[in-house]
Figure 1 (cartoon, rainbow, N blue to C red):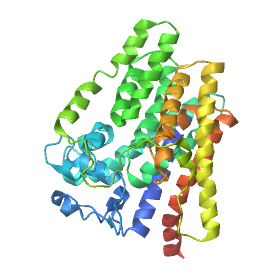
Figure 2: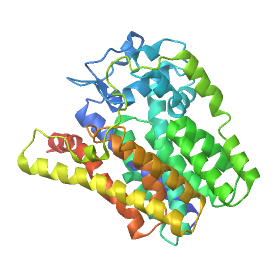
Figure 3: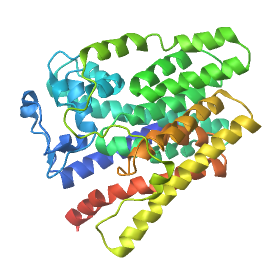
Figure 4: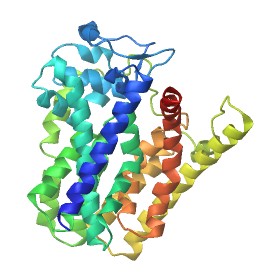
Length: 378
């Protein structure tokens, strides 16, 4: 039984790598750089011209293209940050790009496969920890495969974003924090903050838990996990520009929460448009349900570390409703993925409902690639 979580994680990685190989072969002529989703309308570093980066025509691409450049220049020595839309924001999220650079030994020719390997490594870790938690809840380790339908996982596999790292570390936090404060749990807190700035909320939730338990020393120790993060944030602050310089990222603006219910118009057939609108509303319903469950868990208990972390992410998700518009169908699912994971870890049907409501909208974007594969085969 102890081997089953490991086998489950290996199966997950194998399935993800197989899908990436299939879609790259049939849809992008074998060019693996297509996974970074680079837009043809934006400037690209001439230093990477030898890579023959796959370009999506009439597009500004997606976030993975910037993390790709960052992986080639993780310490801001080569000037590639000039091609990143918001360097100060992106370079705070150093975990995945820097891990890829280290794995590649700093060699440009190995950066791209190393980046993909790092993403798959987090698939492995997220699935492994999920499978172990499933066993602890009395279920089969195969339940750990649910990590594959977390929006952050699906989006990162297809667009090489860094969100999967935080999602996996959240699962690892749930697993290790149940055993008390330890070196692995503190390491996870530090890595989460370096994966994405919202990873700081994990440490905040852990501190709240220990404060509620009146264990001030443990709370202080939890907060100290963020000390290694401060020098990196300071380095980025001193060496990057604060503003978006390529126009691909929209700055956050204060909006009314109800603006999320004014869904985007799709230039598609009536039936397809209604389906997409229905899935958009399902995302909103899933997020609102996750918010409600996270708050209810803290009120009713049991008050475990993940419950306080869930509350922190619920508050962040509520704030997100007031600062970003609904134009990007991936934006909200990516941001709330840690919350969806923390809620789903409770294991009940209601706890899984938010994840199952949000994921279908993300899966829609796999259809064009799947159609391309089917068309090439038949």
